[in-house]
Length: 269
Image (cartoon, rainbow, N blue to C red; front, side, top):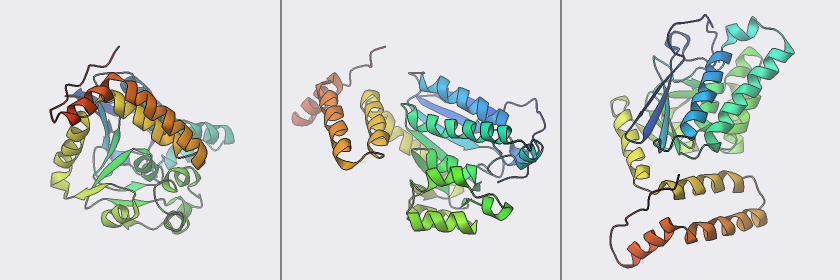
């Protein structure tokens, strides 16, 4: 959590760029450690919706400028609006952003170059994958200010084990990048100077795969994980059968059998 100012700025709250199939969204409140103000969350939700509908965007990378990845909610804005209705609206807005990341068809990578605390740690956990610099640190530290990180707990407990998640939530203590890797919060840890090249390598692997299969697979992954085993298998069977009759899978399997490089059909629409 961050006791940051929510003063208006002429700079865009979120920087956006799409190039060579990779859409980059960058939180742009460096002086406030990229705190998630109400305004920033609304812009981020809009950008996610726009990119989700853009066929030119095949992979999404979420990062931040300045010293921090994201230090959570803007506490100064929160304390200036001491009304239940405001807090309900703010936290609901944040939840919509986190859900939007998992609902969009593209794989989303968190680029974590610095600290990620409270809702910032939630943002890392909500992304499909995360690559962290070895100097990055993570915490759900609301408890230190008397505010249990209830919303971050939802994403965190779906990434790391229950006991590790609970320990982080009730102590507010930081873990380093290597510990985050060992606990499953991030996928890869590299030196800060190698962060962008490592993300580029990971993105390139996914860019080489057919977008239709990734889209179908991502939707299935998040739907089945909340189901019981029987319902999950029913959904998986239906999804896999639909995938198999698709031209992409037909081409891919034929190419595998005949030991040739697949010529992926272009997506329709």
